[in-house]
Image (cartoon, rainbow, N blue to C red; front, side, top):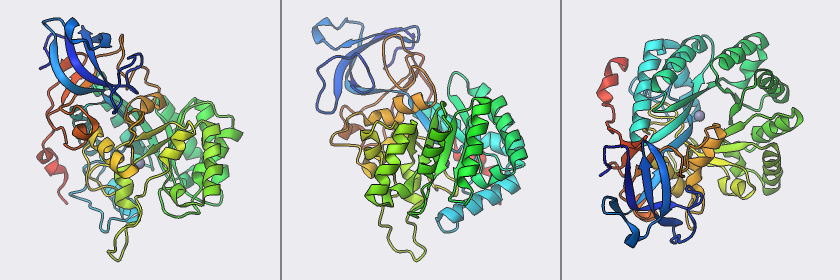
Length: 433
Ligand SMILES: [Zn+2]
């Protein structure tokens, strides 16, 4: 279907208004326009409105199928991925996940174990059409000495296929050991990583946040937080992060994940927090599949009553950049998942109502996370850009989001890639309990 020459013309494809700037007019009610794409030596040479009469004979007519840019997944944990068979979550709760993952890390996360599971995850993401991915890396001593060198080697090995970013991950109480944390910040800077912590409502939260910001400023690092992954309305660390960004005059990029408790708080508190988040220039990523799984999990086996996700619509309406991402895959924080961003977007559409109208929500898995990750030209389709895109069977949102589209075609640098998902059995020997 895609000529294996690197240079060709695809006629009659559907491109979305929010992802193809400069496409002009003629959008259908789903926001798609029919277009032709000229690919020359791995680049998009031109995108033009589709006119049947003007279609050259050698063009491949794709019958109105949707083409999206390759995905950008800005919040994952590929160092934890796929440990479920040897370390399941005993009860599906957040604490169950934290304890199980911590025990597995201490007992099993050698460099080889982490490397093999990371590579497995990246092969999944690549086959599904992801082009850039940020992973958090558990960085509680002594794991940082093991995982960061593995990450750096993995980033090199995958360069050109997946642009890989890493952010350190530790509970904010770990920042109290200033000497150790400053060394970690230096380590992260040396690896060109992102500084990340999990915030909790500890009494010295503001002081600890100030120190995190000071280290980020000192080393010129962007920041990435896990915040308020709970239904506890007293969890307001998203607001505390915004305040810290403002009073520290921080100029780097800040991404905050989860922010679940915000959806439970009184309206006036929510408005105050969103004002500060917008003013401080924070971006927010929601992890809808993980939130649905862990939040409102009830010990007595009764039915959950809320969806767990944060207020993405209200944020976007205020101009706050918002994304959705994979988070965990087959580990105690989420028993399922395969780093398939189409699945994430399909689930996000259902859980968060990213439809009627779809508007520019497709940016939440493409252009917006690309900007947060400082990746120019990722997440859009435009002339002069790389010919990195996904060709689906669906011709409308209802067709695209009703089937898994397992037979999608992923094109990288103009050529269709082998889309081989790794066999689970590859990891069996690592899973012996
Ligand atoms: Zn996470």
